[in-house]
Image 1 (cartoon, rainbow, N blue to C red):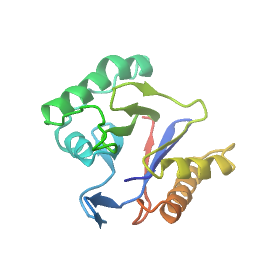
Image 2 (tube, rainbow, N blue to C red; image 1 turned 30 degrees about the horizontal axis):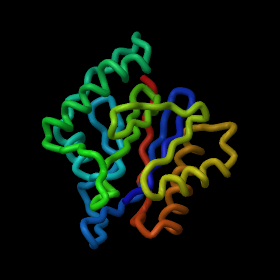
Image 3 (cartoon, rainbow, N blue to C red; image 1 turned 180 degrees about the horizontal axis):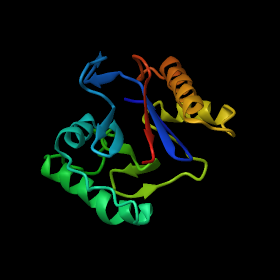
Length: 189
């Protein structure tokens, strides 16, 4: 289970996550199993089925960002199909949730060129007009914490500090979140 937040500003984006990973009934704060990873020109953070994050971190060959193309269109016609194909090729079976596994599935925040996209296991995406995102079991708590902070005059340093505070609040109030806050920033090139 996870808490991941995203904050988008003008020319930058910040992603934050907790560092706890669970496997069956055991918690791990494992090194090398980062929830936010840099893959070429992208930052990606995955909540839910950990195998999806592992596949994208190790197998995904993302398309080179075309800065002259509309980013939403680029996401739809280039990025999402490449993510879907990589996950399928990696052997992940995205079958629908069943009554025996109601925790299956995944969500992700994908960031390129300073823009954040929230994607789901149905390969759709959305962008928030406020530039605030929260996914994972503790994502709602962290997003609520972010929304309560003064985010009107955002800078990337204030956003990184706010993301860290929000993740720490999720760690405090969600039993499935833990470890420490991990924060990464991407700037528009």
